[in-house]
Length: 149
Image 1 (cartoon, helix red, strand yellow):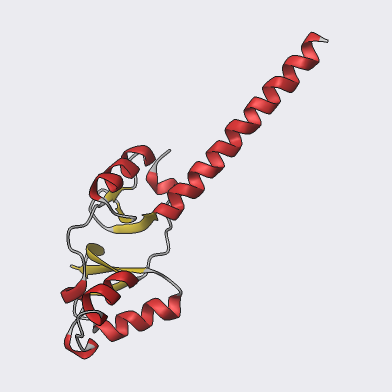
Image 2: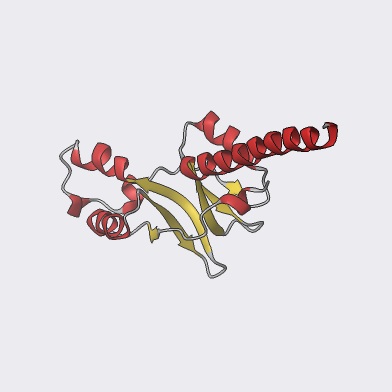
């Protein structure tokens, strides 16, 4: 299965010059744990960073920095793991694991943001796959029983 088939296509975005308080308010209002920082060069939104609610706590609050003094670009993690929408889910998950990240922006062939894949998405996909496989086993047993009796 391709990552584009299991990612979330609704992505919370902001720009690097957005104030961190406004970014935090956006996260709160959207009930979301992360926002992708993008630049738009006229060809679409290209991810350049990501900010999580944990980043706000660890990088701003815990350091005693006044939110008015920093922007999204100051706090964002810029070493993104970008996942292609045509990349296999298993490959994407392996790259995310290797990088130690729980979420990755999903991009098209031109590097434009088209979604985000999270650990939650991968767990949901895995649970559905396991359900289908368990159903296959039950059906196989029932089919065999019907043909052999």
